[in-house]
Image (tube, rainbow, N blue to C red; front, top):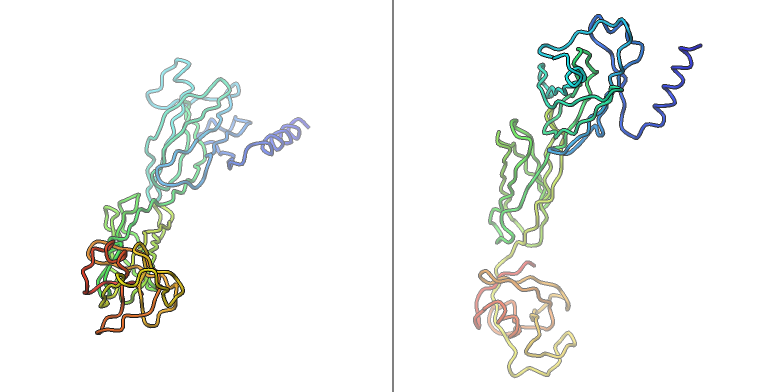
Length: 318
């Protein structure tokens, strides 16, 4: 009956524990057979981002009388050292345990320690008397930093997308999605990668990057940014002599109005214009031009914002 009541109390205590996973541990060593109460060791999170801190906590219950202590090599007999707990880490794919942190258990055998995790693996706790906890698995999520190299490009140019994945050390598969294309590459050992996307059509494009998981870390995603692809178009400008008149789209033309005239694009069509290093957003507000082989007429305000001469080639994203 006593054994039954102890088991029932343990189940009730576990039901009240916070959401973290709790593992019952198996003791190692011949002296552990005399232990009636199992130790516990758990992590506050089982999956974290690379470089995040995880709180490891557990309990080594006080020994029962008659247990044969098997202290760790080098352990001293003072009270502090007799309650020392070493946290060890075994990286995924490796066989050997590495020292991570050292802490001290309280009189009831409880201990807790925060540890920064940089790659997937397993943690365990080792008491000064030789008792060991069962390993607790931690899975890190790769940290991905990516960016699109050119915020604007001309049709036919190649736009670089590059970045870095942490943790480093292995070659990892990377997929870049942009403009309906999927570009595949592999990171170098320093975690860096780079691809070039050929801009075949005008428009505004978003680049998204995905790194696949491996034994060191789980995969992750990142938004690398946007790029605008332009095409060349012949243009001129108009304005003086027409101010105060109604445009074909029903507006009153003024010296400060930003806009363009086009023969067929619907009124209100939004455009992005580029000349040299300057860009401006404009709408179709009028019809024209009707002279030469020019495609656009810029208002005087649009011309001045771009630094555009009277006639020439402007770049447009539609």
